[in-house]
Image (tube, rainbow, N blue to C red):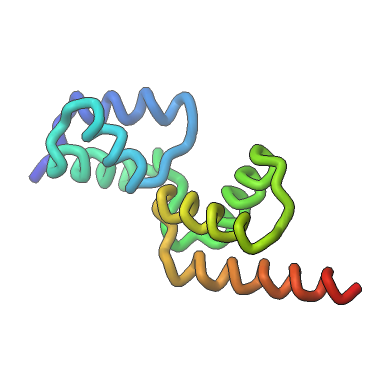
Length: 116
């Protein structure tokens, strides 16, 4: 299915304000009234055009999103924080295996800092 030009245009306008992952963009377009198929097609097209820079498998984007989340929330690394961070990263559209890997590293940092 080719994407609806209006959905692609709206997506581009939304991306001018802030970055979205492909998953987030599709969800945003659905909330704006586009069908799931139109929304996914438009998000995919925006990604093909290089306008969506956040990818589910992008380690650096995941680390950046995690840092941004923790700074914004003013949270220290503790188990409950990692749980809410994981939910946030899933909503952003990152791969669950990559999230798990990142959280394992963060948990290791927590364990090491407790021993110091």
